[in-house]
Image (cartoon, rainbow, N blue to C red; front, side, top):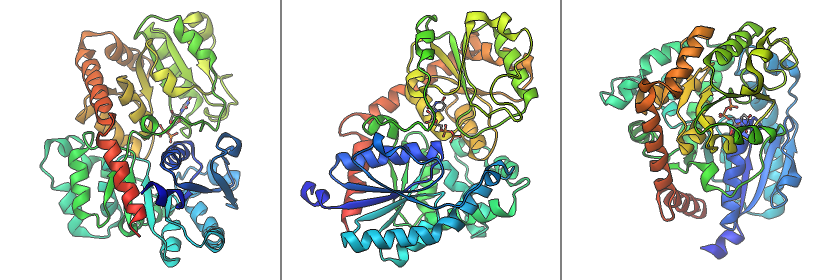
Length: 444
Ligand code: UDP
């Protein structure tokens, strides 16, 4: 098999949002370590730095995206435009690669780059989709797209405690509120791409989402390969689009074990100045040390942290550290970190689980609500922050990090970390999944 892999070429079609780019690069490294040669096709915006990955060939395709697509309040707008604008250049690019190499073993595309699926199919190539979010999100797609009413009942009539704890009906209603035309179209496209690809790779672990996975497997024609946690399984890579500020690690070195609340809302979330002020006072009044990531431009109408309230810095002193971007995986693994206040992005969720860090969840949009439900109601390793009011923030941080009430949550977080470590062991479930994927790629 090794010999055959050496001559096999896999093309990965990447979407260059941080939370999508990282798992795709991790998958690329994993396949490369198994002998495949790799070409990565990506849109122009947020281009990854090829010099960080000399082992891969990078091809950039025009996306015609402008600032206005990203400042649009509709989160689906950049994705919809990306697919519309990239379809033709992507087709030409794949044809060109095929012409020069004569053979492509497989094309692996991100769910967000759904336009790659029909192109791959037309060219007679093996198309595999990478789902960078949870497997549980896939329960929603038939329902959102209204593709099949029977399946909707099939999903929502589930009696298992795990799926009932997710409160799928409530979440579906929440996610359907104010769904724009672009959002609806993107969801239908997601459902189709999952239905029509030859296999679905998910950055998750079987034991995390057993009920959802078994339901999705019942209606999915394609095999589902759970290959997570990619950040632990794949060789280490440099994938940050922003520069990581390492000074926070020397600050963490000075803090007491499990005392710090790490605060980060990922790479996309934005909020208003009023919310920044409530977060700032909530952190200050909690009296816990905190490491807070505020991305430039994250606060609407501000460049960085100039809207922090008067008196905040004096009241916090050395107890707080604010950075523009942190080496998150290193931070979560640090002994001083006792809790993670997160927006519940899927990568952040998995990274926190793998380090046994309990979470304080404040979801903003999309699958962040569903992930919050899994964290707080199914795995019970976190608390949901119901509103961004300073008193509530202060109380919830204390409940998570210090109060007796948080003992169970903190213990379950450690238990889940141990399960993940076991899952990752050599010849364990993740290795089996990788072998399954390689077999699938080489099967054609
Ligand atoms: N991240 C990081 N430094 C930061 C904040 C985030 O390296 O200061 C990384 C984090 O480790 C994760 C990714 O950015 O891998 C965010 O992905 P996630 O799915 O959690 O959220 P998204 O950015 O897609 O909303």
